[in-house]
Image (cartoon, rainbow, N blue to C red):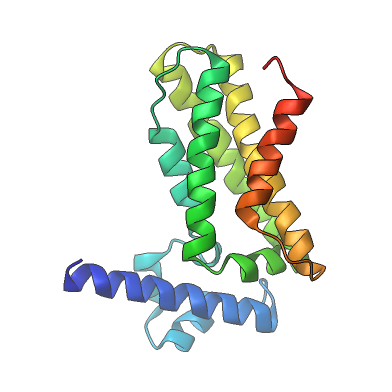
Length: 194
């Protein structure tokens, strides 16, 4: 990694860390881009160079999830195979998110801050729309099949994350990746022919 990339990665971490600190201290609604910039010691314009909003700075992994899933290719032509491939990619991203970000802090905030659930719901809508559109454009799935696959992938991510967030909030020690695996297993047991 070159100097420029290292600086960018450091700045991304500093802005996200400041955003998390401020939201934990004063709440999401009271936190402004100006507060974040002041905490990091940069201008508001610099914050916007790295993140489009305070919500994006708070949960940067959401856009990566959308981008990665939309670009994921499957070797399968049927909906169940495509779904399985996307859930596997989702699991990898979930594990990466746990390892690389302030997953536990964000999870606790999701339980404490109702506005965060609305933000996540908007981001999930974006994921479903982008993924279902990409699946239709690639070929074998009908629009209804593509929408169902996109919704199921999004629901699996949400259920695993919310389960972890609730357990974390309640002080229960758990492994988020294992919760994702359990979510997928339960999905399979509910719809064994799918």
